[in-house]
Amino acid sequence: SFNSLSPEDTSDPTHSTFTIIPRSDGGSWHGGDQLEVFIKMYDFRGRPKKSGGDFLLARLHNPALFAGVAGQVLDHRNGSYTAVFSLLWEGDAQVEVRLKPYVSGLTHLERNTTEKCTLSHHVLNVEQSKGSVTEITTCNICLKAPQQKLCNYTDLHTGEPWFCYKPKKLNCDTRITHAEGGFRQNLKPMEENLFKSGVNMKVSIPASGPSIINILPKSDDSQKCQTQRCYPGEAMRANPAGYYYQDAWRALDGTSVHQFNNATAISQCLKGKVLHLYGDSTVRQWFEFLIAKVPDLKKFDLKTPPQTGPLMALDYKNNILLTFRCHGPPLRAYTLPVSEFHFVANELDSVVGGANTVVIFGVWAHFGVYPVEVYIRRLLSIRRAVVRLLTRAPDTLVVIRTGNPKRLKLTVNDYYALQRDKILRAIFKEVNVKLLDAWEMTQAHYLPHDLHPPQPIIKNMIDVILSHVC
Image 1 (cartoon, rainbow, N blue to C red):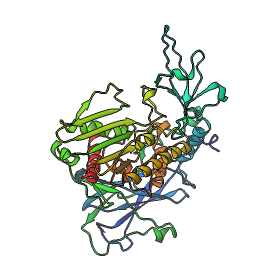
Image 2: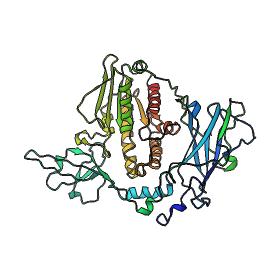
Image 3: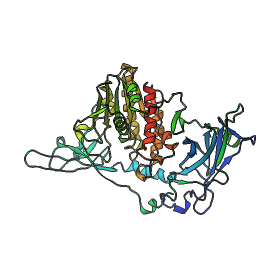
Image 4: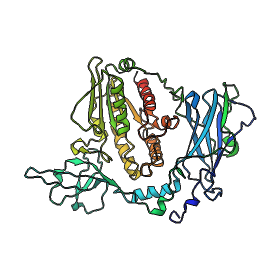
């Protein structure tokens, strides 16, 4: 069981190895080939692992060419894995495999998350006119208390639940401010020992032989895949969303990504457009990037919190309107008036839409500590609103930002983010939207993972969005 598991039983990246599988004909690698890497996991006692469940991220890269692509990892559920890469540039390519938090342990964390829904505390700050009475109370999506002891702030249109414990002196209509009140991990000391950064999390696995291959120009007999030969019924293809070359993202979904390297190019693309951005701070980054890069796009002071908005920027000369608004609760790390609690679905219902309207949203980073059902409900609510928008204005461009890998923090780690990323893709699969694959754009890049990707990655993301716009 999880409680009897010792750190020595978990996967040890330094004992584990990866091996590049040679071409089946023994020949050279060419552009268009599929490279396969066999990964064998061992524990801290040096014993081979007999079960799967490790969270591995694989990347193929060339630092000199600023080139990189994410690999697809297949879990054989016996302690071994295969990573598959598309070979997309000529020259050297180096394999990198990293171990993220131990998933068997994370499954326990997921269960912990589900059972203890009250994970983050939020502030109810209330002021009355005669003197000043302030009370702080805990709020969340689900609170364990009889209904008569709760204030019910469930959104009437979306049905999204939100509750606070009733204040002792004040009534439910007097809430003013929402803020984070802290986080409880709910892990025992023994359980915390299973997750150690630099020991069994975010550590590179060494190669048992060469880790670099040389890729020759494309040939007619490129090798597509050889996994089926090794593991019948488990054939897989690397199917990356794109790759970096000379630090520029090249999409593989048919999108021709152009470079928008100056303010003039961006302004010409956005001329006459309305861009509405919704979501968390990873979407707000794009608002901030655009107003920094385009001097004529001037931020209008709406006297609102800079983290949550609403924010607005105008370019009168080119008739460009840019807005940002944060999504509805749950929201961590922000202090904002509760009057600014707006759910994305409700906002979308107020968008007229049309050929000159671009709607962009990303809702993921604040949901990792909640049961997955909470995230599914939120996305289904947004999906219905997107379908309504596209029904009344089919020419509206809708772009959805996926999650991305980030720096290590157990409470909001990449395992949670990846599970929710898969849910996001599945829910919007049949809807006419563009998916911006922030996951692969971050994973394939040479810069360290971060919740808020650094400027070179943001620049590439903006290039992808603008390439959809014009």
